Image (cartoon, rainbow, N blue to C red; front, side, top):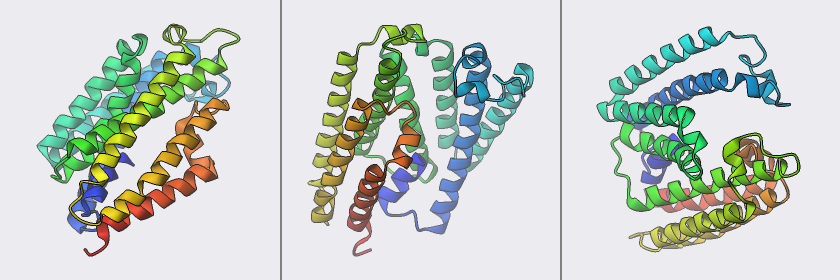
Length: 268
């Protein structure tokens, strides 16, 4: 849903043409992400068969042959890039960059400490950028910094949770063995600090409705703190599940959305 970020922040998501462009960008990202997941499932099928949850994936479970999965992935990638280019050439370029990034991650970056975190985070940032490019919305440096730092925060949290789970039996991936809980905690702290400072700088430099934006800082800080506490308690391996299942995180997200959108749309 990051594709919605830029149009919502710009206050134009309610325009029919923009909504249609966002829907198209969302479809493109779904196609490209599906292609990437299929390639990764083929590559990791032997390891996934040993995992209690991942062994039920179609390729790992033998329900989908590797050859068929790769052919489907190629079709999805081609259709995704073609659709992106049809929406706007700029989105086509972002789509190609997204595929290049995910391919680099699968083939190389996933085995390089730090770069694996940055690569995944960059994928989230590209999804947010896609929403701006598809709708021809200017993306400020504040938007990119906050998005990037929050993405690093979530990915580092995932690595932290994975490392904690395998601390007793030894990490599954060689890359994970080269991380330490201490370094990942520092990464989490640094990413959260950058996100809060950048968001605060953005909020208090708005020409109008500064009060709404200023108030929205509180739920953001509380959300990051709550997420950190959940990670410390052993959660966080599946960030999307954690975010959707924890009531406190959901309540804080709703509070932030209300204040943020109020700042944008009050007086429109």
